[in-house]
Image (cartoon, rainbow, N blue to C red; front, side, top):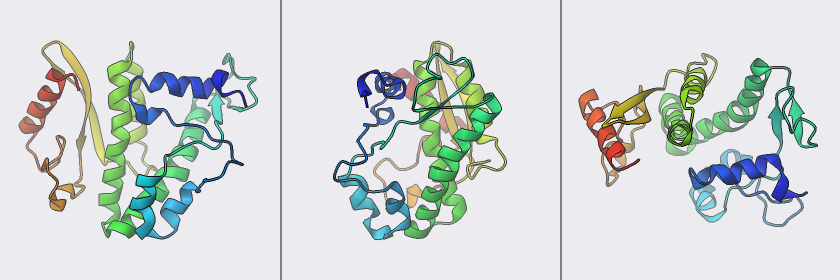
Length: 218
């Protein structure tokens, strides 16, 4: 596999300039040291913290979906879809069904938190991708639309857990989330107290923390 010229791999390398979390390495399936992602969530929950801290996340094969007419539609790792509705359907299958749902179930079991609390924690993690993409995009309007579509999907396990909005301060704009549920992180004695978007913080206090983030370039 020629990873240097692979469309998905090269895109992830560019996204790494936004945040390193977007830059997943690719490893050949036959290489030693692989642990199935489902083993992290469907196996022994007590192993989860150690596995996450010890092993780097990677892709075993860079598959990707494309719309008709895409310049890389003939790539052997691409999967063609008929239109945007089908493309979003593939996103739901790959991201929601195969990733978010197992994570939510694992948090529910391992942390002893309710399903709603686990859904809220996962939903808020998803908002970070939209936050960073908005700040780096030359045309952020589609990012806002896609975030609304993603979090307002009624059949999704993250439906109704967060809202996202464009916030402006001193001529700068950021795309921030507000929780609609509690993740209970404040009960763990975390050093920074409540999250900047915690449902337990009054809206005006959330706004001030958003202003502080924009002033710091966050």
